[in-house]
Image (cartoon, rainbow, N blue to C red; front, side, top):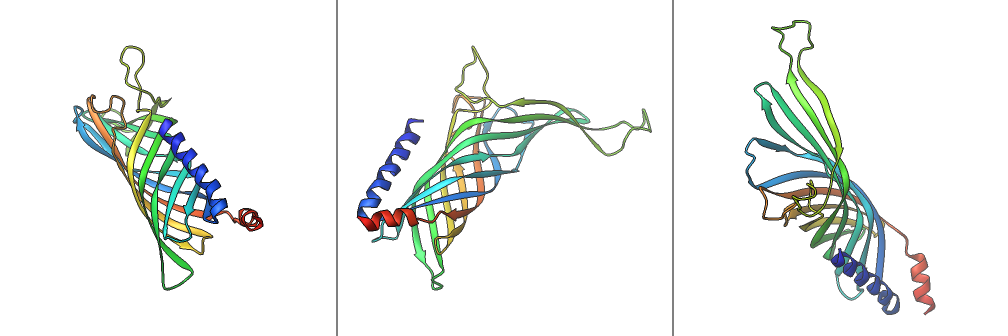
Length: 252
């Protein structure tokens, strides 16, 4: 958490410097959808099968853009929700499906470059940085999937049946077998790469790919299973007008 606070303080300081040097500090809101893939690096649970799912993210973003160069620094602060499932064979004709929807505080930061296109309305952007996820909560649904035995009772419903067995909250924390069992580690780090198309600094459509660097499960590498997140996300960013900031700089 101290690293996140350091990054936020760094960008606030740059914001104040931007007002003095007439550099540009832009502010945005964003939202979008993501597709989550669980990469199982090591496991003792061979009968588990993971399936991708759709989630969402939303938050605020800022970019520090020196006027003399085409690079910029960026940081986002928002919420990110993932959705995926884990299936395991319970009996020969029954499967237990676990629908997981963890919720994280999402703080990606890094550097990017702007490339003006021939059509002056558009600017191509590339991003590279680190994505930090801090666990907040979420839900775990346990479903029973089965087919009725029509030989026993032909009046039973046909087709795949689903029954909700339980719904519980997800817990985040360090590994501690003596007192409590956690579902996920408190923090998760990933490498973030992305591209975007900027429309006259009023809106931007961006695509990011996050490659997990750490185990999302408690215990890091000293655990029975190592999972790493791989997330593809699509965002729409809307710029806040900087009239107030620009007038303040002009007066100086």
